[in-house]
View 1: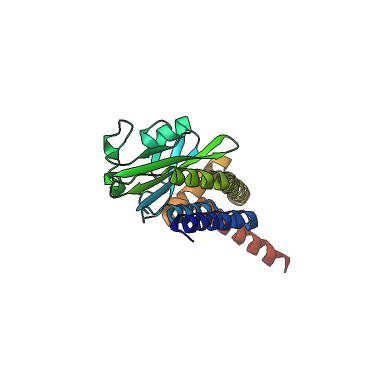
View 2: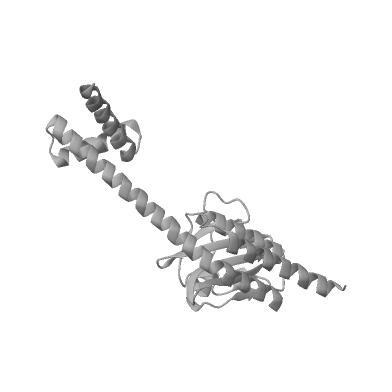
Length: 240
């Protein structure tokens, strides 16, 4: 078996493995999906760096990285159209630069990312049913020619994972909304207890919760839960 055939079989095996994982997976957390995407992209194209940005409104938020970047993951944001990554998002077209990527007129430098000193850069849009979901970037320290095979493979991975990223993103958003709704219900209930027990106005009860939250360095949800628990204990003792 020649080298080209072996490489082709390895690529197929990786893509098959990725597809199998997606087909068998439950609704994973967004970061788990993105970490899996980085893992497969790096295995397909042996690169020194890999970033995944997810589109949120009109911004691209860095959500995953091959190299540890805890200080910027989930914080670094780009506008669509900003830098090469933003250009790829805007035009939904892959960009491959073999060397001196910093000289590309679309390039934008970020002090937070030492990878911006790398030579070669491949950026591919992640799509779901024709809609942009995010962008994946692969980089090399030294000049590197990205073959059509590399671009096709990463694009294929993007098609496979794009829908899962979208589902995971929506699941995460729904989870946050549910948590916010639950917190709001608890705060409303705690406010009612303060109004009833201490004769406070609704505004005064809310300000009291805020003040306790600041003083104890606990969330308003935790303060509300403590007030509700105390009220339930008092109510229980009265019935004994």
